[in-house]
Every structure is written in structure tokens, then in C-alpha cells.
Amino acid sequence: MTGNIIGERFVVASFGESHGRCVGVLIDGCPPGIELSEADVQVELDRRRPGQSLVTTTRTEEDRVEILSGVFQGRTTGAPILMLVWNKDVDSRPYEIIRNTPRPGHADYPAYIKYRGFNDYRGGGRFSGRITAGYVMAGAVAKKLLSKLGVEVLAYSLEIGGVRARQLSVDEIRKHRYANEVRCPDFEAAEKMKKVVLEARKQGDSVGGIVECIALNLPIGLGEPVFDSLDSDLAKALFSIPAVKGVEFGRGFEAARLRGSENNDPFILVEEKIKTASNNSGGILGGLSTGEQLVTRIAFKPASSIAKPQKTVDIVEKKETEIVVPGRHDPTVVPRAVPVVEAVVAFVLADHVLRAGLIH
Image (spheres, rainbow, N blue to C red):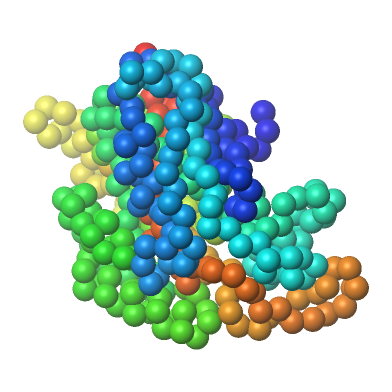
């Protein structure tokens, strides 16, 4: 397997570059008979599409999905599913200008060394957030599969630029996570988040934030310890989203400051079913799902492409210089990352559901 493939039973292969002809995904292992149309996938893609608000890049891609194989008469056939979107609003000229001056915060320099200068550097190539369109396509199929078990995956912007949402109910998250530009169901916090993002853009800068994701109605026992435990696989996949710098489950890093008596989740009986009184574990114990809500938070760094002058090195002339990154960029990646996080969690869960033999 290569670094562009993930999953054992629900296998996702990512392809394409930011300024190449297209980006997309090949899915192998999806069971036959799942209802699936281009409209189902398009709904998800529209949520991450660029150029929709003041808090995202001005690059305007239609991102109209084409399903080229694996679906016949509205249902999956069991054959590999190939989906793509074409890159149309592409302007590579700014990247020719800065070709020899790696952008701070980007993978330009290590990629140049690893691929001996043969990598597609335009728009970041394979390292661009553009490739996550393929992730979302895979997630759309995974969500359809998970719905057969009643599993639901919901993500939202918990924090942007230091502004954090209040504690929210599942119902609020479900109904309002896409109700505003910053994808935060707490409308008061959302307004503050938007102001912070626009101020950063005005200053030629960017901000980071945190996406929280929950999964509901998971069967107990998903996961294959030790190296394919549920949180291991989720963390690996989530770190494959560009700009992710941290992943935690349940109380996460906060648990390091608690005592065992505070962090443990006592078992209780609720209507003759075994539950836990709290969910500090985030729905995973020993790498296995507990049946409680799966709760994970994903930290995104500030977008690396900013309009401020920054120090860099001309790798050809071997001299220090300054760079102002041209092009069209997101002042924060967090709002557009929300559907990407949902998708990634969904296709990891789909893989584990199939590995557990719960869907055929």
C-alpha cells in the first residue's frame, strides 16, 4: 500500500493535485445495493466548496461530482467507485513566481527534497486542502452505509481564533452546524468568530481553531486493537487532513490534569442497559467503541498562506529573502474543514463496521 490509500475493508484511494486536471477518490469494498446518486455526494461537496463566503478563499470551483464507476441504476454494484471533480478556476501564475522560495508553514521545501523537484508545486499540489474534496466524496458514501445501522456523524466549529462555543446539545449541532458562515451552532459565538476571521484577513493574517466531531449510535466493540484500534485509525486519518496539528478524544489532554477518580466513567444501569454515568473517554476504551457518543476534537493551525512579508530562502541562489504569498487563500480553514472531518470520521467508521461484519 502507498501513502495515498487508507482502510482495510472500506478502502479509500485519494488522487489529484490542487492545480491538476481533477481531484477525486477511488473506493473499493463498498457493499452492493447501497442507494447512491451524484446528488447524494453533491450535498456533501457543496458544504466544503470554496468561494461561498467572506471567511473562505475567493477561488470559485463548481465542484460538480461525476461518478464514473461502481454505481448502476441508483445503487452500488460492489465494484470500485470512482468519483472526481474537475479543477476549473485555476491560476498557477503566482506559483511560478515563488517556485524557488518555499512558503513558511507549507510543505514546499521538504516536498522539493523528497521528490527531487519533480512534485507539482502549483497551489501546494498534493499537499493542498483541495484534495479533501475526495475525502468528502468518500465520506458521502460512508455515511450512506453507516445510516443502515443508524450511525450519525456530526461535526462543527467549536473554536476559531480563540472564540469558543458554549456547550451545545446534539439537537443544536444537528440542526444548526451549517446555518452560518463559520459552521458554529452557537450563533452568538459565531458572530464573534466571524469578526475575528475578518479582522485577521484585513491584517493579511490568519487564525486557527478546533472542530469537534461526534458519532452517535455506534455499536459496542468497533476497533481492532492494538495497532488498528478505533482511536488509532481515526487519529491517523484525521491527521491526513491538511493543517491538522492535534487530535484528542473525550477529555483528551485535560485528562492528564485529572485524578483517576475524576476521569473514570462509572458503569450504571439505564432501563436494564449498561451505560456510563459520564463520557470522559469519548466513547472509546482500549481502542474499542463503548456504545457512548464518540467525541473527538481536531486542532487546525492558522492557514499558512498569509499576505504578510515572511522570511524564506531562495533554494536555487542559496540566499535569504522575503516572500509575500500571492494567490487566493482562506483566512481560516476551520469552517471548510467541518464537512471534511465528518467525512474522514465516517469512512474510518465504515471500514470498522465492515471489518466487524455488521454490514454485508
